[in-house]
Length: 272
Image 1 (cartoon, rainbow, N blue to C red):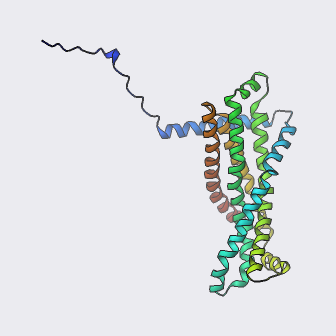
Image 2 (tube, rainbow, N blue to C red):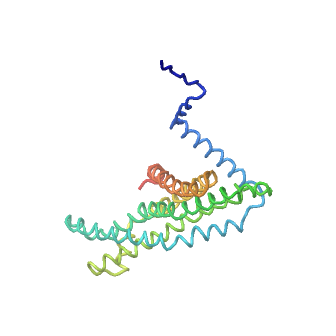
Image 3 (cartoon, helix red, strand yellow):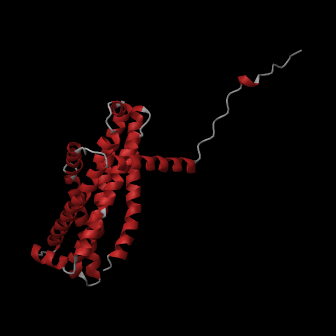
């Protein structure tokens, strides 16, 4: 007669652990980000400041990003000119094409294009660089050697992004306006002097300065998020790739949200 063999409770497979709640993970992430920002701010008030590393990061984030940003700005100017000409001709407003190109570039297209391009170029670089240093224990070695990584690695990169982004925006604006004129003059010849006089007609200092300076906030977002994601990297080389990707994605997302808020802020405090 067959007998059944009972399986002891200890021999059963362990139940799968429940997944961490998404809301809890999000709150933990923001909490860690707040702690990271606090440590960076505290390191800024600790002397001496790492001027050599700051200058190196300005060169890395600025001069090496300049060709890509100018190319993106130039492409934006060409597209604005080509796409808008037919519409303006249909409504008999072809004469306002230079003004439309200049206003579109300096008020919105130049700053947002610069922010998004920089988030890909600078954010991925910072995330991957600091992520590699974390998984190879170089950051741990710095802490053992009494070197503050938040001061040497994070603060210098964040300040470099804040300084560089408005300068890159000026380059993108210049590229967009020049190539907008070139695309316009190929379709219908117009002198550079006439194009720029018509385009700048009605442009005030308040139309140019706030949109350019708002990219300093974009630089703060890119530097903070990319350094934060890089310094919390886990999981070896695979984790480095995830940190670089998340740096770009999060920076782009926060830049878009910040742009909506800043545009409304500019409209309230700098009415036209």
